[in-house]
Image 1 (cartoon, rainbow, N blue to C red):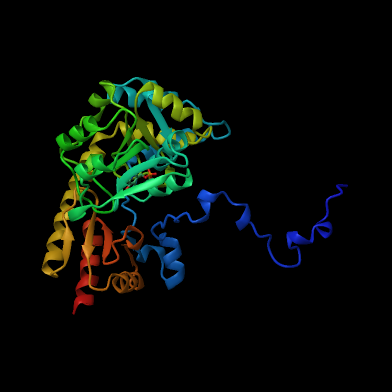
Image 2 (image 1 turned 90 degrees about the vertical axis):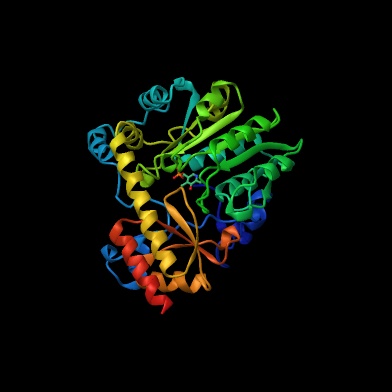
Length: 381
Ligand SMILES: *Cc1c(COP(=O)(O)O)cnc(C)c1O
């Protein structure tokens, strides 16, 4: 028997509720903003007493058509090996990626979603006194990862909902180690032309690593050839994901493309077995399904057209989008979000992005978009 007993340690609060932990926390964790995910369908269904099938989720930029069929076929085949740990080097997936991208296998770093790459980058480069430059309305994970690592996010204003690359360049100091740029951006949907991003990448000083987040690359009609810049030796990491156009958000898999040195360092801080064997197998299959990507981006283009026309007809202000969602302005956005949710339509409020008047609405299938527009038109009467 151990000598340890809670009766000897009255401060553990055995009788007074749970032991307080606040004072034990790392400084960087105490005031960390919390990532607000879109509400899951099951949760809203339970809250409203509706069937999950009656609810549509337009809140997390998932592919509304569903998961890539080739990936769905690969998963049962991979299941018999579930008793084994995954291949930590992801030999097969990194090989397929390397061939497709014309890079070396050891230039790839796999993450449990591309989100994990942002945290790994901050693990490598950020600590107290280090600055990380990002847009004020850029994807919020960059800010959270920076703060968690004890660094200082430098949030640069985004006029017209678009990254201001000149201002971002000016925000870089001797203390800057990382710059994040998502293109197209979430949550604004705006896109910068490839030449401007390339000029920006070339303008950065050598002590800065540039993270170019391409979560929505497949929706961009004219994406930057970022591998060419990495080949040239610029300190860039491009991050990509299977969560969006491939429809595999639930599997959690994404990757980074960088120099071998950076990939090796990222792998040195990556938790072992961070991507599952099912995710790796599904990703391999998905990469072979180019029809799916074409079909999904075409459906998305039509969906943006349908939503845009509908928003115009309702006299709503919206931001032109190159991604799979649209930023829309409302007089009373939280009331609109609540009312939509009551009718089983989940959209995303953006208070955490300092866009309190806007909602981000993911593009749905044709009937989903029609149902959303119908619900909005009832609101507007
Ligand atoms: C969705 C998204 C990601 C990727 O998320 P994962 O599911 O973690 O791969 C990355 N960046 C942006 C801007 C996104 O919107």
